[in-house]
Image (cartoon, rainbow, N blue to C red; front, side, top):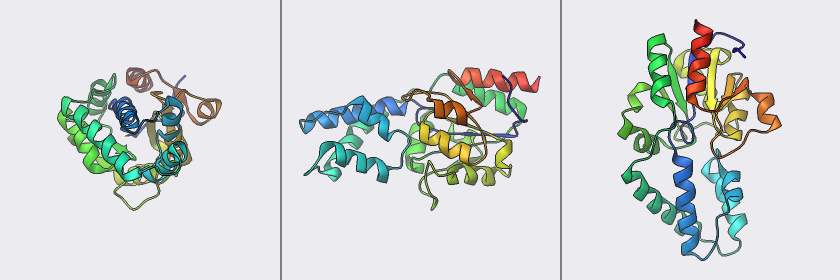
Amino acid sequence: MSLPREVKAVVFDMDGLLVDTETVVFRAMQRAADRIGGEMPFSTFQRMVGLQHEVSDLILQEHFGEGFDLDAWSSAVSGHFQEELAAGIALKAGVGEILDWLDDAGLPRAIATSSRLASLHQSLGPHGLVERFDALITRDLPIRGKPHPDPFLKAAEALGIAPGDCLALEDSHNGVRSASSAGMMTIMVPDMLDPTEEMESLCVRIARDLHEVRDLLDAQRA
């Protein structure tokens, strides 16, 4: 299946799409839960994927119940995450190849992430990837987060490309909702969340990895 329009720019999510941070965050949360004698079920973690911290914090408080110390929890999770970050977080399959293809094609690209700019530099900096993007849209900006369309609309504006001419790549349900509502051609590359019927309806394709996305772009350009 080909894309519905010519792609003039690509907007990437970061966590779970470019770098394997979702797996690392889940492990950090499991370790933090062990310290307080609790559990972090995968199903609870899945509910938080792709959400702003303010929203995911409400899910945590609901899960752990009365007396839950959110500040202590956040500190513990951050500590465990930093330990793994120091050892290096792996890139997802196909990242280098799709960026090389975009370089050859001369297409601009941006990141639209729910993470802060500092986290983006921590995750992508060691791989030398930050400078390979033309715009970085993070939650430091005064815009509504995913699933609102604002992050992707801001990315399109920064690139100077109409949203409808952008291809958005996402791994989370809320990310797909955000990109689709911005009017972008959207491809889901699942990580921690499986595609649903809703995701199928909002996406032009569900891809197994970024290699498949690159091949799709290449086929359309041929």
